[in-house]
Length: 119
Image 1: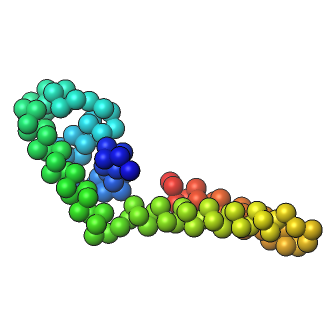
Image 2 (image 1 turned 90 degrees about the horizontal axis):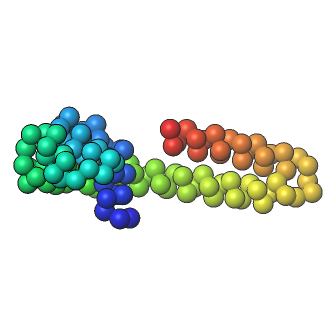
């Protein structure tokens, strides 16, 4: 995963552990695509100060993922739900009406689970 996308992704999981200033800087830089200079102007600090703030924030986000693995677990859950759907679709396409109905129920439940996981 590209570094900027990865940091933005980790921010979705662990952004609440950052200070308000760190959180705002990460949001402006990675999500809103502002430059170091633009953020420095908003914060009233130097570009180097913003860079240091971002580096500390990145380090915290990466350390949290290394310890908790929430993003990794999230991705695995989504992959597993998708596998369930694929297999249930195969079952649904049989001549056995009861099996097809069960498969459809599995698909519907897995789709709902996928929505809940993403929310």
